[in-house]
Length: 184
Image (cartoon, rainbow, N blue to C red; front, side, top):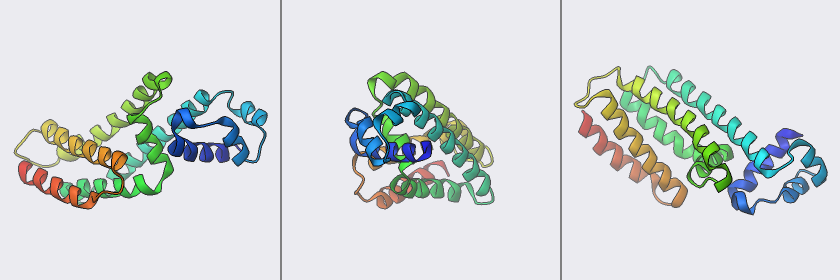
């Protein structure tokens, strides 16, 4: 039952935002009474805290597995694939949307919690990118190359959040080509 509640809650949070989500609507869609939902989650805040913690853990595992599974690719291929898959995952997986949207637009009462959890995720992404760059020679330091890549990723993320129907692939191709030429 909790898994069903969490799936429904993520969809509602993505659609209506934290302030617009009503626990009664989640309960109705889960075919339970609001009092039953309160047994599992006494408040919306507690529900979101559990959801966000789980989503961050899931995405950390994904990032670690991604770079492990693609370690045989060149760094250029790894990074491009990471950005390409990020777009697909951001459009097709509700928990990825929830992770990113909540990080960008955290509810005031959860702002510190969300920032702390998201920083755990960012730390792993940064660690994996630094590790990938440490395997190659570039015209810049490992840290500088990693930072530049992360800025591109962040910009593409903002594009997905604020303009989801725009031409991501064209923006990705252009920025990645310029980035790669600059560090090569």
